[in-house]
Amino acid sequence: MAQESMRLVCHPIAAHGGRLLRQYTREGQGAKKDMSPPLEWYGVPEGTRSLALVVQDIDAPDPERPVVPWTHWVVANIPPDTKGLPEGFSGKEGAAGREYGGVQEGVNDWKQPGWRGPVPESRGHRIQFKLYALDDVVQLGNKVTKDKLMEAIEGHVLGEAELIAVF
Image (spheres, rainbow, N blue to C red):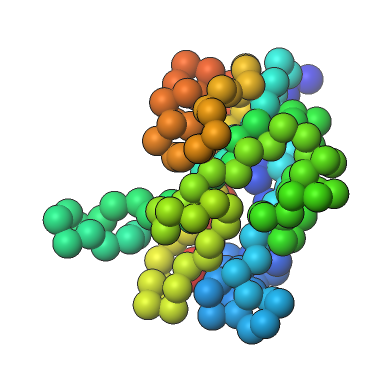
């Protein structure tokens, strides 16, 4: 039997026609604001030693160029037997940190650690969630960034899954 290809799913996004809900953005209300969305994945390749996640606005404008990806979230060293990350995972040090031992959240393009959702001015943009299955655990030091992660995973990717949401 052929191995299923990797899939990345966010049920709230799927249930709303591929749209990123307000609670996952900077325009949410109170405690339901700027929460990291719940993610599930399937079909992780055999031999995977860790997973990594990069979330970017792939339609972000740049005055110097037409478009440049804007990083919303970087997560490294997710244990390979993990089936997903719950809603509001980002920034949870205590119980979630112990349950997902070794996970490192990186710095986004706002120079803040963890998830930061899109802002109202960025409507109509595609938000790309990209999950990587790796044949090793990456050594990134204390400050994890998208650039450091992408350099570290080069030549170590066993599989990828992508989810696109629209804000």
